Image 1 (tube, rainbow, N blue to C red):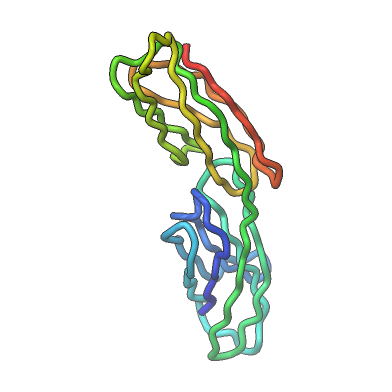
Image 2 (image 1 turned 90 degrees about the vertical axis):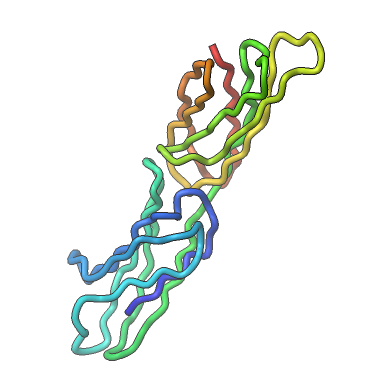
Length: 173
């Protein structure tokens, strides 16, 4: 048994694929649940001697970078591998081109996974637009951000998540 501890909390690790390989052959796998935690993958068969395996965690967002580490498994023993999935943030302002008559929810998704929901309130003045802010923490990689809200149309925006914070502002049409 190989236990994988992901030391990172980020959107996209819920449902992440955990794969255990010996060389190029997959010998075990599991699906993660929760944004960070412990996931157990059972290696098929018992190694005849201490064997080194590669453990890979692949986040669910399209564009996220898989992370790998090696772990040595002894005969009849369990081993633990800790993988830190590097993350970064993207934040910005969502502006509705016309002020909503009622509060409006805008969903922000990266690589097909929802990372934020922003409620934009009805303006208290005679403003003709309304806006709200969002922040998403994501595994490092390249993504397409999509924004959806009933009655509004947004253009998808590409973003590269790295250790440097990214800003993506969007206005509905």
